[in-house]
Amino acid sequence: MRVLFGLLVATALGAGALSAQSLRPEGGVINEALRPSAEISGAVIAGLQMHEKPAEAVGFSAYWPGSLGKDQEFCVRVVSANGLYDAESEYSFVEDETADAKGDDETADVMVEVFYPTKHEPFLKDLKDREVAASISLGPCATRSHSLIVASWAATPDDTVTLLVNSFRADTVLARLENSEQTVRCQPIEVEVRSAYDTECSLDLGSRTGPVGLEIFRFVNRQPAPVTEIKLLLPGG
Image (cartoon, rainbow, N blue to C red):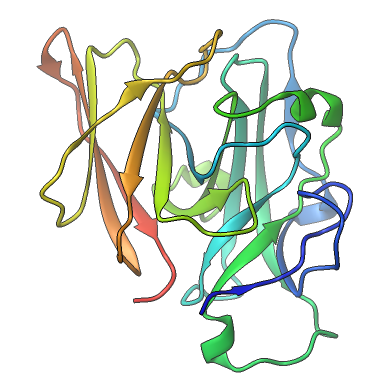
């Protein structure tokens, strides 16, 4: 059974007890920008997440693969679809040493809170659903790693993940999980302004665990663009 810990207070999903484990920004601050005019993202992948962001939420969770080392560095990115807001910050895993010790079998699969001390809380609280995307990749932000764990806008896991993509005016976007017979046709997101990303791909995880390959196919003027490959890191396995 997956173990769910309490939420962080104030800047997270809501009030509650301090989580025994969390991801926290190095130096205690995040690198974020809120602009008066839109900026178009240069990355294909804008987000990989469970659930849609509810209004008033600011922080989120990570679907934590227990196999990852506690000294692993992460890059957390958050971007608004309208291109006005983006953040890119390096994070570290933090464990509350005062929490009761638990066996490895109890802590292998958890939802770990992502502490998000934003200076633009009113703006982020107004965003909802597909108006904002989050991603958590392994390694420092400069590496632009395509090994990702799943962000979640709720404190419970789901069997479906959503990939948010900048199609770069592609006619068709497809996505396929490793060892899957089904290729998913991605759809335009229903957001009025879509500068940073414009397409969503809904993927059923089923019973998959551990590392899973994911491919994104884009066709521009009916010609295939280079395939984007992701390593999706899931609990278990």
